[in-house]
Length: 94
Image (cartoon, rainbow, N blue to C red; front, side, top):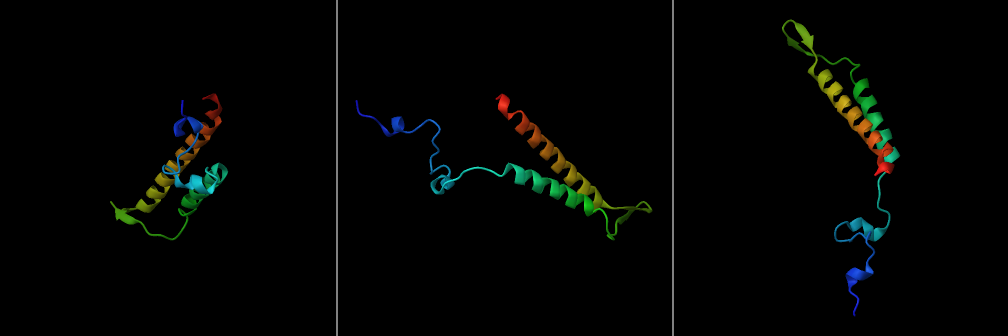
């Protein structure tokens, strides 16, 4: 019986047509750098709350819509980072 190319490939092989980076070697991510960059981005968003920017007047008081956006973006980043940490801690259970 003649062997086919499919029989020669290991079950975990990645086809270079699907992912071209396989041809030049390492294929992975930067988990620690992703966390560091994420937390730095949260810090940067929150530090931008301090400043001399002007808000728009809304009903006699000042409403700083840019502050609201900065807090929302920081909150979404924190939620994503915590989900990522949780996923990594429970990955061994799968």
